[in-house]
Image 1 (tube, rainbow, N blue to C red):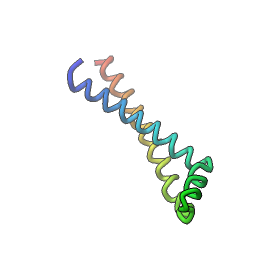
Image 2 (image 1 turned 90 degrees about the horizontal axis):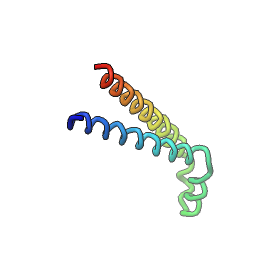
Image 3 (image 1 turned 45 degrees about the horizontal axis):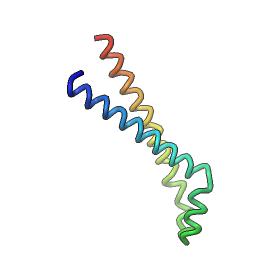
Length: 83
């Protein structure tokens, strides 16, 4: 394995991990009252009206990042074994 292949594999793994972790965090914050309780306890409940404007695009971004990273890794693995 060359150095470029190692960098590509590490980058793909980091992208996949970032996408999955970000998706899980955004999904937890969207679909559970974690942020409502946390922001209420901190006295920042006025921010609750803006959560949908931030969390739903964040969730879409991290899901798209995960899909892109998996697609990129699959393409790299296929070209590596085919050629």
